[in-house]
Image (cartoon, rainbow, N blue to C red; front, side):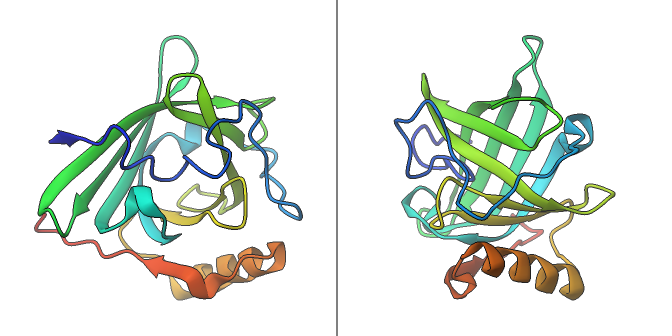
Length: 178
């Protein structure tokens, strides 16, 4: 698998790339209380506001695991439909404050962090809505390659209430053969 390096900064490398103090969009509120252990594991990207680091990617996933130093390993993967190859980016995430509040900062490049804010999640930690640092970055995630229509509609309403233009969302394809 080819290493992404700069490409699949996927769910996190946002507008504030060079900011060490990641933010959350005005009107958004991170989930609290948040169970970081329940959030660990594999997530499928269902939809995103597309940007250059994820351009041409489908079958996108993120896997989160706890590292010995207390940070979270972020392993992003996606299939580049133009290059016909898998791409991967490994990064780290840290909580901005308490680990009971779903505000994190994520880095794929040394000391440069970007915001990762879980703004909606179901009680079973099966579906999540993640806001970046600005209204240009949004992801809908699921533990499976699909999401129920009622959850989708609820998350779209939450995103719109924050100020997101949900018409900009790209709905990710997941092909079991890749």
